[in-house]
Amino acid sequence: MMTTNFTLPKPLRRAGSSASLRTVRIVILGQAAVGKTAVTVRFITKRFIGEYDPTLETIYKHELSLGGDVVHFEILDTAGQEEDALLIEEKIKWGDGFVIVYSVTDRCSFDEVIRLCFLVNHIHSVARKSSPEPPPMVIVANKKDLEFDRMVSTEDGQNLSKGLKLPFHEISARDSSEETAAVFHTLYRDMVQALSSSPTSFRRRAVSKLMEKIPRIYSNAALGSFGRSMSCSSFRDFQQD
Ligand SMILES: Nc1nc2c(ncn2[C@@H]2O[C@H](COP(=O)(O)OP(=O)(O)OP(=O)(O)O)[C@@H](O)[C@H]2O)c(=O)[nH]1
Image (cartoon, rainbow, N blue to C red; front, side):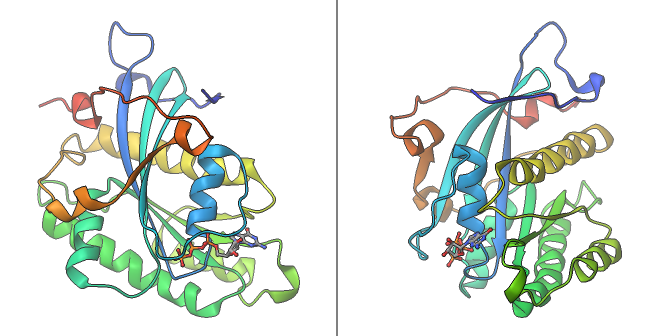
């Protein structure tokens, strides 16, 4: 299991247990070919794998030790092409936190970020009336290694993130496992903070059966051996009802 020196706010640690287990659901959004799968697989396996099936939509399950907690990530890597509004709504409702990816080599993918952020905020504000705060989100500018093909400056990305009041990471999934992991650590930290300020914000709601049809891959399987099935508690366990 991978470990990191990530520090959690103490009040959220489960009393009496040294390593608690929590489940976080993350949805990766962004236009086609911006590197959503590359970012997800880089985080989970620390490897960069060049080509993937663009149509394959997957939920990756991955366990990681962060600041003394065992965190069970469920990461939905969406297919980037235009799709059914109902389907995207179900996926957004399913998620607790969101990574919105664009490519620095693709101006259209950058323009799409605002629409996706508003869509996430809108769907969550309707679905989770009890929690008025927008859900945790991170903006990711990927492919920064392709400097000669760059169409979106770092400053453009920073200004967008300031305007939307969201964290911003410019990364290369191809070149850096650390930069990629930092995206998920930031999001996880914000999810923990959101939970402490709004304990009902991660209450699970019923989602469509369509979500059950998305294939699941356990990180151990992605690494070449079959993963264990785990029985685990979820973020709900940390709500103080
Ligand atoms: N140079 C470079 N290429 C990258 C990087 N990240 C992804 N790619 C490449 O970009 C292409 C698309 O990557 P994917 O991860 O399949 O993109 P996606 O957003 O999941 O695409 P869809 O599934 O079609 O939505 C592939 O050829 C990757 O190898 C990066 O950081 N640098």
